Image (cartoon, rainbow, N blue to C red):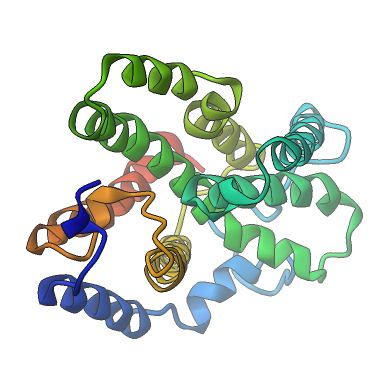
Length: 262
């Protein structure tokens, strides 16, 4: 990655875009009704969303067994990955999205055995949007943006390109960048419902959290995982706006084509 994208002052346009995004997220935060629609799973007096009043599968159903097995698999993979690679993968957006995916599978597995007022029901619904949308974002951004850019722009030596492609098709990368979408959809379809505005807002909040971590911690110590999002060029506004638009497009597509009858 060229030095001008790693070291130096941030471009004013990037600063304005980031600050503006924070302000917009705060101003557009959901009201009590929006979050109440998520709380309805634990409070039967709150109006249902669509036709669903229970947003987790019954215990010992096929959907429940899937979430149990997937949670065990993902937890095992976390332990194995940490043993092999240490903590470094956990600073990436990819693996932090995978962590949310793991947690929600675990929540689905235990929800049938909890009281209707247990906090896990609400948190599980808070995670629904970020888990589903972030999994799709990870797969799309990595496979169709970052991977080609890294391969063609930043890797010039043929042997290094070969090793990069081999690494990208390794077991862990395939799980994190391709099969994560499959797992996220199965998890959400275990008890489907249409996404609502609060789901979209939670996803933007997750992205803003990671952006804050990336720019204030990783960038400061010289870890530049996502070169197209560097804040040191005026052109950074394009990937920022593209990501915001991609998230909204995924949200809309999920409701239009997948959960339209939920």
